[in-house]
Length: 253
Length: 277
Image (cartoon, rainbow over all chains, first blue to last red; front, top):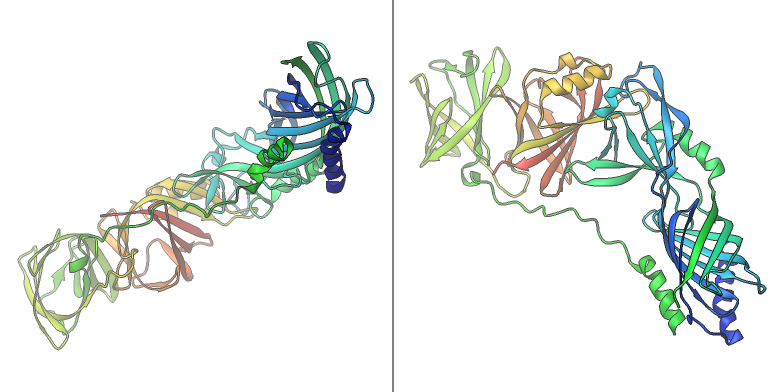
């Protein structure tokens, strides 16, 4: 995968040079949305067959979906407590840059896209709701950070690093689409379908340190065995993030 | 050239290396009573008259008086074969220590490593005796009194340890947390823990809101502390007498592996401490 992406990027950079084409002689602004959040993008040509797209996407978590439950002890510190089912909500939670190359094999708008999504590893915001009141006091200690609920709710993040790290994820993307990022006239419309490689997801939550520092910490099975219910279930389907996007491009010059 | 520059700019975040963890400013001023700190261990004490402790009015035999680096005194008294400790603040006037709620302790002639001590109790009773005076060294920033900002209690459970933070160290709040999680919170004593002192004479002093204290002897091994209670601690039994000490954001982090007395409840108690002075 890495080699394939590297080859595509190299080809995208080298092709226009050999074609002797105009580079960065146009610029367009694109707005759109999709399964990678709401996006704002700038596009410039790297010759007649390749466009470079750089942008930023944000998942506001406006659409929340209840998907499954988590079985947790009603008294977390007790050896004899019974379990309660706690609903789990999901929403888009990405907050990342993107660097993409549209490669047009012909004169039509059909294109292949290669590149990567860069930045925050979070792709889904999740929330446990309806936790028993004891969870507002009792939480779990993750490396001296206390993770606990507030008013029965515990926000979580599903994160994946791709080929990067948690602090800076790099998620390679391949896909295909139709429509030009640099409109031939004033405006163009583009639709794209592809997938980001993101690897096995992990679960993170904000915790309060002993001296009041707030930091996001990874919750593993070591701290909460029930978290496996989330990572296993999501991990089965989310190694690749399906990316369907729609963009409207306006030519700036 | 534009492409190379563009690629470098795009990769810039990847090239930024992670810095060393910021642990904040952890330098502390010397505690105010460092020059006067030390521990009197009573030597040739023959009680001509019994001393009377302030909290319980129990008759006891004076064993030791410790003056901490932050102005706290701890009087150790043997009552019915058990050591009991009383605490309070002290002031120094020349060679006389004025112990709030106890009386005065005047240090006199030092002879053959023994110090003469004249104790005037609040009741007016005066005793003259000798003691070994161990002076505090002040060689470690831990040697001072610490107030309790926060206590984090982690109790071992069936699924996973459960943790909770408490402002200060109020036992009633902790008892509720233990009860809510199926443990015997009623085993905790009433009141609260007011301060923790770590002295240069190898004592850890837990001073409670009722003026009493538990005292442990300790030794450092790097950031580990090995300790054993001198009195029967009312609060906790300690698994292997293990604790660790660390510093973060100008606070002392004292972490003790402990088990609640009289129960199967065990876990970790972490104190976040601020210097008293």
